Image (cartoon, rainbow, N blue to C red; front, top):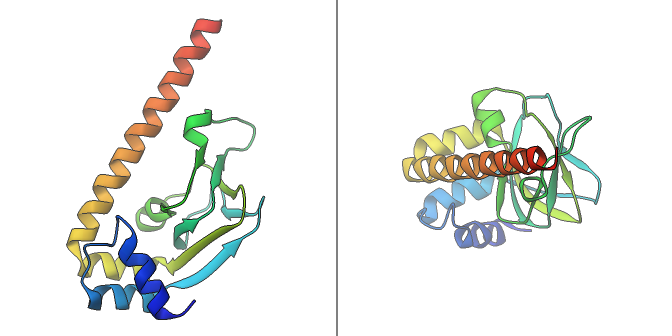
Length: 153
């Protein structure tokens, strides 16, 4: 994938579509295309992520050692940004992120993504809104699964 293809890919995503051409070029220039095979761990549980990933093709599953996450919570499709919270906050990820099928992504070292977010505040705000929404959705899924489990007891 060349830089023009990366720019086109990023400009089609909800997260980056409002960026101007210069900002997308900076982001694309620092991105590294990566792929993961089915079953491969992309992000490891209990480790602080050192890269963030924009998944543009494929599906992933969240897995925790010795436990099971609710179905709606655990599987996610493409157009994902993975590892951002862990990477930026410097906190360990509470689960493994595993490829369910062939996953294609762009990867950035944490510091490159951090510099970009400081340069383009609109993306930072959108990312904050997006991540907050995801966290609320995940919490609702967990609460619903706990409530369902309580009904069965």
